[in-house]
Length: 212
Image (cartoon, rainbow, N blue to C red; front, top):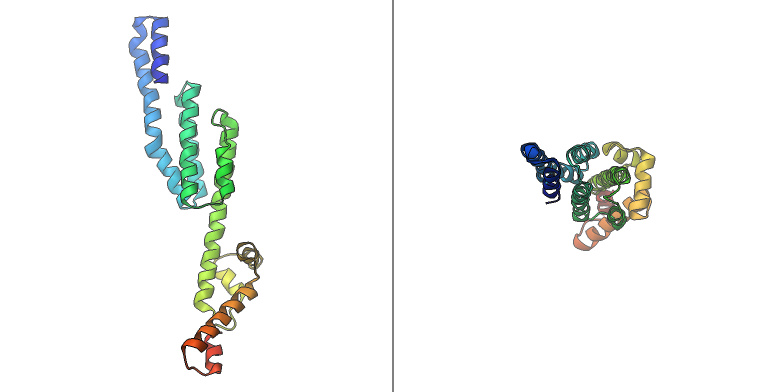
């Protein structure tokens, strides 16, 4: 509507002989507006869901370029940035990300192209990094749960399996669970011992062997 109003005003100012040119101009603008959501927004949200920061940033850059080069109206640009922001917030919410990420996104100003772009780029980068760390940690815990009965299961082995450094994985245990690696695996083994003692008639030696 805003682009149509702008085109009509220009036709009245410049005369009817430019009518065709301005309606072609309007059609190009409308194409940018209507094609933004299904193509690029889908690419952005899909990349966020898969934690692919490069693909997400590339999709965002394509949309920002389309908005800057295809829309003369500041209000239309603001509206399209708002659409991008809403899609990002919806994806973050669906992924149950920490609330501070959503709260930060809500504060972005779609009327300021520079700060909007910088802020959203930074948020996407940090969000994907966070989810990647969580994915690695979940994989590490799953590996421990499957191999806890190996008495020599070390932090180094688990770190190698998930392709992280030993120190980094150790820090993840502290930040994610509030315990050290050895505290976690010891508690897991003791829980398995308790279960086996209650539910089976196995000798104590065999129970401890099976629990690692």
